[in-house]
Length: 51
Image (cartoon, rainbow, N blue to C red; front, side, top):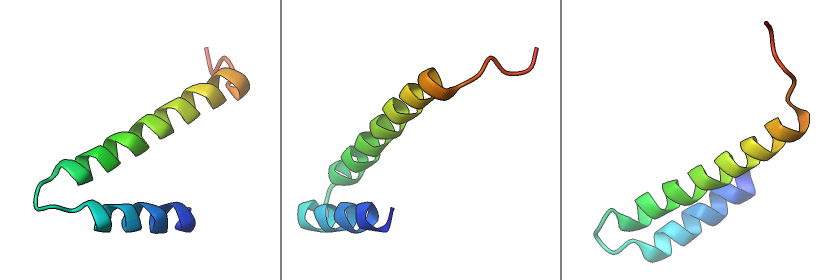
């Protein structure tokens, strides 16, 4: 997690240009990564839950 945070901070530091687009692109990228990971893991390891 720390390596990913360092990498994202490094990328963000190089791409800051006075607009919010690098920050929003980073948040969108990690949001999609988390969504895909959660969707995959829930499909594979999720149970039916309480009924």
